[in-house]
Amino acid sequence: MTPLSENPFTLGVASGDPLPDSVVLWTRLAPAPHEPGNGLPADGSIAVQWELSEDDTFRRVVQSGTADAPAADSHTVHLDLRGLEPDRVYWYRFRADRWISPVGRTRTAPRPDAAVATARFGLLSCQQFDEGYYTALGHLAREDLDAVFFVGDYIYENAINAQGGARRLADPLPSFYDHWTLTLEDYRQRYALYKSDPELQAAHAAHPWYVTWDDHEVANNYAGDISQDNDPVDQFRARRAAAYRAYWENMPLRRPQRPSGPDLNLYRRFSYGRLAQFDILDTRQYRSDQAYGDGWHTPGPETRDPARTITGDAQERWLLDGFRASTATWNVVAQQVAFSQHKETPDDDARVSMDTWDGYSASRDRVLAGVERAGVQNLVILTGDDHVHFAYDVKKDFDDPDSATLGVELLGTSVSSGFDGDERLPDWETTLAANPHLKYYDGRRGYVVVTLDPQRVRGDFRTIAKVTTPGAPITTAASFASEAGAPGLQGA
Image (cartoon, rainbow, N blue to C red):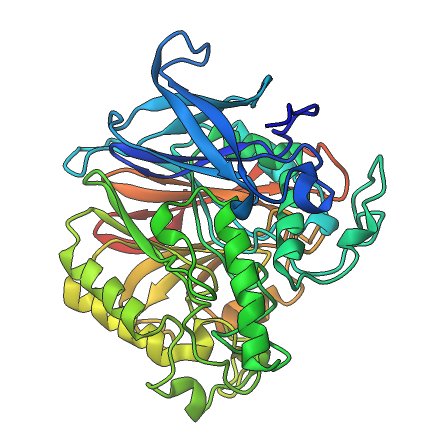
């Protein structure tokens, strides 16, 4: 191999999908991250050494070895380490030629039968590069967390001009980014751009991530094989295959998640001791086309059609079977778009979003019926997509405020998408009258810290005043909690 004359670890390191005895370690070699091919050969592979240590000085290395970074995988490494101790913090690093990567910190999950006293998780989504700095990610990197849930829109497919939008760039971006992503090379380069951000790298290096996607990892508001613009199916499936391949390459995911053409099995389940079961969903790949278009519309026969689905039949059965088999205190569902009903006005013919679970109400009804049949008492839904903070009580019948509360939904705002945002909703009183199960709103950027213990779940809604100016402080704008066995959010 020709010696590497430039540092190849420009995109950082990451870990993810922790199990009691395993975690995935990731890196991508890119000495020239903003050039097609990242400045590396188009074929062959590069040997990458790795170390896993019990301390951050690497005096107590417990495992080490060499892995390949194949050109066919955009010179990425997906290292599925086994034989680790449960509920243990480890540090890791990579080496290629004479270059050493940044150090990453990760953590395994507790044993399935472990009594976990408390656990803390970050909830993130929607980090459009050209609409703001990743200030929230820098703050999240310094949080004391066990892991992070990223629930969609890791990249955006839009053209980015040379000035970088809201960011003041020291060097203009190459013109390569100034078009919409369509090909595998387009998507690979878009991930390289996003992952070149130091605050995103810091957040990955600090915590293991559980990831899932929403729409912008491929194209806005797509539904299964159907694009927003109704492109020919074969053409769109080719685009989806390119996007899915680049997604897998750039995420800390295991080999079973490696895509086959335009198909990638992303929904998966994890346990966190006896404290929690995590069900991570994919509400894009298998959904029916949106009813009445993909905007806001009055519900009608199509939205209520039981033949339509947001999860697909197989994933829905998997989810409901998991509820029945669960023995965890908390059943946590990490997914993409708003689960709870959200009407524009209190009117009977009020519009709802056709792109959320409101546009697939029969799917939602089946999930909630499955929650009741399984006797799940502590349902927590973690959501993104809306670019605002919302906190909801999940009702058996959203049109009846007196119906049973079956769980809670913590919907986290964006990292940067939507620019700075506003704290208050101009029509808050109307929104609250239309949605009495809605407990909180904040339209600024940030993330949620979710704390679980055997007695309650707590959501701390962190916000940043501005993401168009770097370095803004983080504040806790509000906190809500729900007690185990008595679902319903209360101010904390």
